[in-house]
Image (tube, rainbow, N blue to C red; front, top):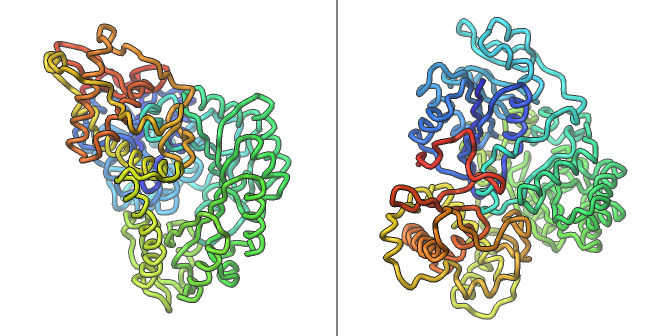
Length: 593
């Protein structure tokens, strides 16, 4: 049995890191005996032609996808296209969006055969043996499908109690080199479940109100496996890592006992951290913590059932500062009953903390209390266009504020940031003497935007194919790294972080010495081909020459891209990961463009 799992496109603004949910689903199918391929359109371009080529190469029996609300329309479109191309495919979707919008999804998207609701691993294990026996599906909890023109839901499956019984996420199926080039950290979870009833969050319903914890040794085993792929930054993605202090300390102690030195970040609630906790987290490598505070108005915090206080927020930030951890806070715009006064209170409180902070607009996702009980709140939802549910624009209004009012408030905040950023950009362009931290912030942003464009537009694949004679005839070409920029970069620094540390770009774990990727391709020829690739990318993107040359040279030296010489041509390609050049499930990968 062959299973293709699609990772649908995800915008750069939402930090497209290696998809954890996709890897858990892939691991569940592998554990059930399937051969699995991840078709990843997060870090490559989606076209129907590419999808057809991937299907022809892999010949799957099943194609599935998981998504959140903001990229659900693209995911559903891809799944439907796959069904059109290969009608014999069994197509399925999972994830939080379809779990709480099952009937409407199946009604609107006839190319989706089946939905997996809630936690999917046990459902997948039971369903795989009955793939071609729909008569057995009613006996498998956690499914939704069409039968005789109506939607059938088989019932709610209980939450998985022993998370350590699950296989580790199948990151070996990811094209890790692409993610390392982009530079976002790799997420892990240390448990599932949330006891807090915040009205804007799906989490409690998706993973349950009782927290189930993983064994600290198992967690650190996963960290070691991630580092083995060459990643060198971790993000702890569950909100309740700090909720049980003894267990969080045990995870930190396990990291220290194994001598692992890796920077990592975490999410936390302000009412779950204390000095002792933050001190051992810092000792174990944690350098930043993100707090969801949501509002600076106490009555609003009560209304949204956040169950924190502003004093707790102040104390949490103070402790982070004293223990050497960078604190970040996020707030929301457009909560029920929001007024301009509550927004001004929030802004004043955010500024008083003296830390980096940002805003998201309320997005009432399917499955949230605020959506399902909208009649109880001073709130109106203005659209069900899921592509607008990215929390970056106003899609609600209250009796006191229109969507335009909310946008205007955010514009004031954003204008200050843009003014400061424009000043840094001007100094960077004029090559003025600026603090190293500011240099890396500007350079890192440009580098990340360039890299994401290279990936999402398949520029290495489409521009990196040259006749060998053209490469050999090129004279006087030096290495692609821009010398001015290179002089500003300390050893193993990654431009994606302000402090010069590497959030996932390879660091010491990735080979950086000269290499000979084509077997018979000499270094002088590679230098010329590298420069040609950089020139073509520069011309297409309009990015500054030295930035492109440095990025392409970096990708090549770290082995993220390699060149092969065949039939009188030299062709650049992305490697699969540091252990193998190609995904064995894609023998024709170089021809898929």
